[in-house]
Structure formats: C-alpha cells, structure tokens
Length: 308
Image (tube, rainbow, N blue to C red):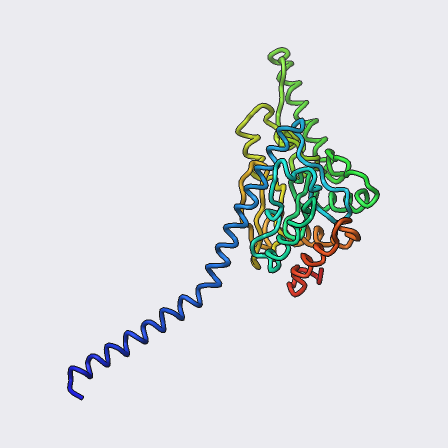
C-alpha cells in the first residue's frame, strides 16, 4: 500500500471516529434536551392556566375559582374552567409526567374532563408564608371533609400580640406628643405600627384585590404589584422534574423553584400538601380509572413522596 492510500485510510478512520463520537454525544444529550423541553412546556402550561384563572376572575365578581370541596383534591372543580376558559384539561398534566399521553387520551373520552392535582396544586387561597400555610393545611383537614369551605383568617398570632400592641402604643405616644406641640393633624398613619406579615395569621379566599390584605401602603399600585409577585396560587409537585417545580404567582408570572427551597417549596408545606392525598377516597365519581392511571405515575420511588 503506497503512502497516498495510507493517508486516505488514516483520514477515513479519523472521520469515522469523529462521527461515532459526535453521535454518542448527541444521544447522550437527548434526555437532557427532552427534560429541558418538558420543563419549558410545563411553564407554558402554567402561564395558560394563570390566564384562564384571571379571565374567570374578571367574569365572576373579581373572585377566583373556589377550592374543590372534594377531600384531597387540592384544585378547583372542572366545571369552573372547562370549557369556557380551558378547552383542554391536559394543561393540568405536566409534560414530564410519565403517563401524560395515555392520561390525556383517556380524559378526552369523558363528558367533563377532570382537573386533578396529580401534577399541580391550586390553592384557591392567599397564603403568604409557611406558618400561615401550615395552619391553612390543618384547617383544610378540619373543614373540607365536612363539605365546608376553609374560613378566612386575618389576625395577629397570639405570640405576637404583645409586641404589636406595644408598637402601636408607642406610635400613639409619638402622635400625641406631636399634637401637643403642633396641634391636631387630620390623619397620621405608620405602617411600622401595624402587624408585619410574619406576625399575622393570614389566609383569604383568592380575589383579584386579595393583595390588599398584605400591603400597608393603601392605594399604592407599585406596592400591590410587588406583593402579587410573591403570592403563590398554583404549585407544581416538585418531583415531576426531579429537582423542583414551577410556581404560578398571583401577578401571572411563573417561576421554577428548587426543592427544597424557599416558600412555597419548603419541605413542611410540600409534604403537608402531599399528605392531603390520603383524604381522597373518591377522586372522580365518574371515572376512578383515570385517577388510578395518573397516580401510577406519581413518585412512589421519590424520597420525599412517602409512597403516595
């Protein structure tokens, strides 16, 4: 074999090795690309759900869909949104869910496709921090199984009453001194004298203006907008993607939060929501088969799932 053929053969071997390596790299990246696409589509689903919820709110006296009274189903009833605001309930099934295709196909055969909480929890209430959220969970267990809505709460935590009272008293003293020196004033208000967010036992049924319960600067649109950016209304079960879940906030934006992480992706709150699955005896009166199919795809092997 002359030197020319040897060079051609060597070039061919190098090209073949490069092609094999490139193919291997592409094959290796396919699952990663699929996961990224599923995560992007999941975020898009929640954006569309948020739009549907806001449209419902506008047409129903500024109120968001009420939380389902079916125990263990932390979502709204399908009749609230389907078909006027959502014409495809597969939006409520995460694209990363292992049985999404078969579940969606099965749901399409039902007269009223269900909205389940297998992938996303819809809270139906304003909950602004973990302490109030955990109390809200206990109230859920006390009221929903009885067919009762969770009563609203807006009060100072007992262990904070003394602190807030002292702060208000001090502010009253300052105002009195000012009036003694300068005469009476029409209105004097200080947000610092009121109970702070972490000092309040607070959850309210979702309304368009529900953020007013959190802000102190009444009439300030910027303050209200800032608050609405932090109020979660739909939370994804964090094992769909393995490292966290998407959260739809009241202002309409969607954010992916790692789990465990900041509220609402804290361990206690997520595990508390998951515990509510135990209350779900008859998830769909018209089709339990679909629910069983969906639950078979839930993370029984996930360390945080406790086998639910």
